[in-house]
Image (cartoon, rainbow, N blue to C red; front, side, top):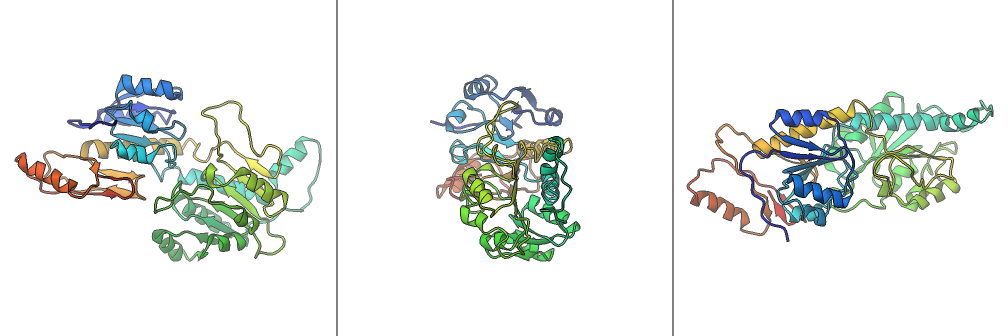
Length: 398
């Protein structure tokens, strides 16, 4: 049973897990936070002990540590989970909402790093560089042009035209690639139209009319429906179907491991629907360095990297600074930035007349907002300005 959380004054106790860039700690301390950093990735038992010992107001993490109802029960003073990454599927959002714990992420800072890796994969696939490395290292010399192509004039299909998808499109267009995209978000459609990129009406149309497809979607769509299993067998089977016979038919996934079943991709490669694939995210990833069971180990046409899309010296400090600023806005001013409970959910307001700020997380039952307003009035306080946001489907509001 969750209990009411109350804090007076700015939040100031931070627990940092999974080693985000140390600049995060510096920025938080500069804003008055007490920071406890745990150098190792804790298991569930160690995590609950840390939460009980340090009673953090905010928990900072990346993508490995799972946060669910049983963990939140041991965090009586927790008000927010701050994700130092884009991905939010490591947090049970329904459980967090039920506990009154907000979850905020950084959807922007790693975009350039991921986009550059996608471009690297495209170029490596175009020239069959992984094959050349392996053959040459093994003493075999083959400088033929078979299966090698220039990217200029080829069509890149982008499944998801969000922050990363847009950057991929710009980079690929600068190399002379044609851009085809699919997205069902109105903002993305407007951006694509402004940039004069061609829009596909369906995912099937995107795959069939592309030489290379790269996937950039979130864990859930804008209506809160999971994208698990989004890339189905028929989509992979249609890759390049409407393109010339020499279409390279390359598939790239740097988005989410659960978007497709590894067996489905293996089958598509074996029958030739997909001629090469580059995968950076997986269903089962280890918590840290060490041994790992690669589901594609016996298929040389599927090239794997260990979830390094955002692993650059530039991206990680950017993420740390962004999350620290998000934390400051939330703690000192009650503002929300990139709450994962709703796509692009943000709440900002002027503070010129505010001597104090009351932030309330509550159920979205009808009449609750009025009860909060009435309580302020009955306390004899003025309420010159307020902002309100519902999170449909989660039963909570802020």
